[in-house]
Length: 183
Image 1 (cartoon, rainbow, N blue to C red):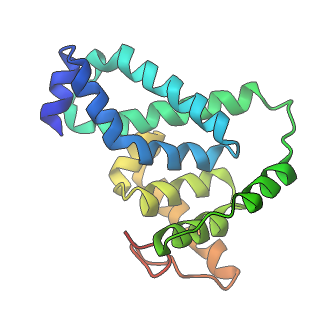
Image 2 (image 1 turned 60 degrees about the horizontal axis):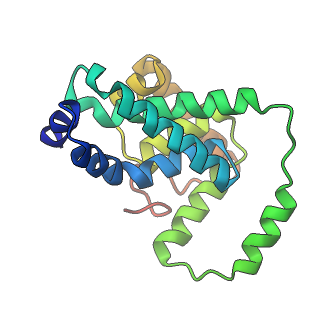
């Protein structure tokens, strides 16, 4: 991975496309945890990719590309939310469209749906930590860098998020890679 990032830093556009493709699903999951509408998610991801492309030469250590990219994405999501606070989204219409799609889900998709449904009503500060830790399998140290918080704060938020979930008698994600979310 570092080799591809180094090529991208030197201006190799194909290498940049390759590393973005490797991170596409991860970016979607993180953005979706912040934004409900897929169109908004796509817009924010596009903006994050453009920023990453423009600033990749400023990345100090290639091994931290994933952390750096997710940090850009989170900043873009937060900016989007702040900018669009005055709008109200029609969640009922989205739900009706989803039901009408009649999608067939694999077991993994079903587990992911359960995971996101389980954390959907958690406060944002807990939700993003759970997604980065369980969904994207970032380490506590990496999450600390992404969110610019201490490792102890990340550990505390993980614990509190687990407690909130277990209070609902749904503690299936209390261990990394638990029954609810398997890779």
